[in-house]
Image (cartoon, rainbow, N blue to C red; front, side):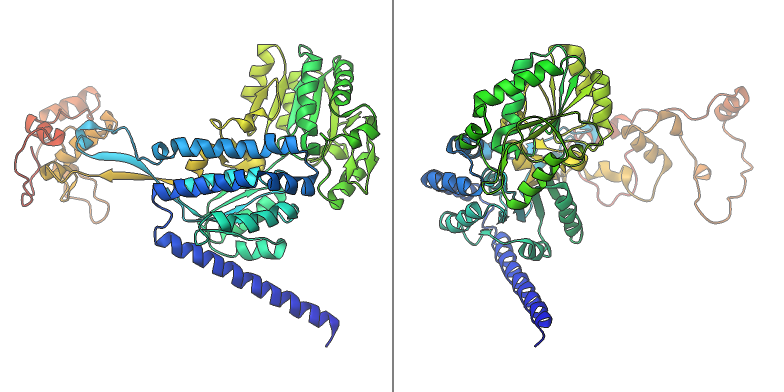
Length: 558
């Protein structure tokens, strides 16, 4: 057999197997959902308690896996991964019963709906697919999973193949703690993900790059599946002349170099007001030395500094550095996947560093004349996941907050908003669709169903909306519905009706009413508000009397 033919046959056989496995997994979970296994609140709370037990009992294993995948320091793993998971679990345990209750809504009209019940009832979507990334593989998987469980869904979790140690740990541990008929971990690369996306899900949540987000959205469109896309983009930092340079440097460098710059909301580049760049650059250099050491060797040996996730990403970043004017840093070690914290100057909007999200420990610094120029530059590009401003003045803060579009805006800090569960975390436009965290996660993984319970009493009041239509009763109903008064005739005769088809009615020999003739003679408008409903009508509409329902009468309550 030809080797090429053999390779093709193996490829299609593997694709067939992937499709069969994906189909079997989704079918198993959908069967459980249709049996309403995940609906009861007590069941959801038990699953969340088991998930917390999984995270607590295996917290050391999670930290080891994160170190193996990203060389992530244990302290950073606890602060940026596990702490957010535990916080979210405790929040759902305390608030889920309240969030899951139907919410009464205001009645648009007491006259029409006084005895009706209106509410919003949260329902689970069904079978949900969560595709998580490699940069925060525990936090971004489990926080989303918590929201889906709390809302009553069954879940397929697809961890990133670029964080293999963490992905393997998910596959090993979750089936031991969670109901395997309602939750599944599906590992693999592009072929396995492709097979999953061919299945019909009721909601898909994806965290990752904008390019892959487009692929996810196209696949979801085949089944009209709603999506939540947590993407990225180039999140800018703007520093004006009033900012404290050292404070700004500390908070910028903390956000930029955490996880070796591999954070979707990390500061991607800095725009500093002309005349303030030297102070900021000197402060950044000082802060990097305080955090990781002053020399490249000290930084590489620092227990607080991570590594680039893969050879491919290291090569991409190294190629960008080769085209840059390095102001500080620039050290690298390919065998160790190490790139030192680096600051690049002499950057313009056309520089290779400014084309795509960097996702690495390289900080380009641009000089702008003023805040307005910075705002114009940001607005000329795709909407970022976050915008950061350092300023001690109100006017620049108002300018950036009001006249830019981004997933979030933070004044005098970076990244900190992602830890606040009372705020939704998400992007806009090219940086994402939808948001989650806390109550916002519950809402994202729920369908807020409008519910109306209509009273069966006082059926006579419904005559106004029933055929055959009488102009006077329709006029009164339009008045109740806030139709423009000048468009409601006070009392129309059958000849006044608008006939959509057929020959025009014969002209009447009867003279028009005196009031109408007088109005026409004087040039006044014929249309006016109808008279208020009669007392018997008002009683029927407001449902304030106990008269018998007249189901046989075709007349209105005039």
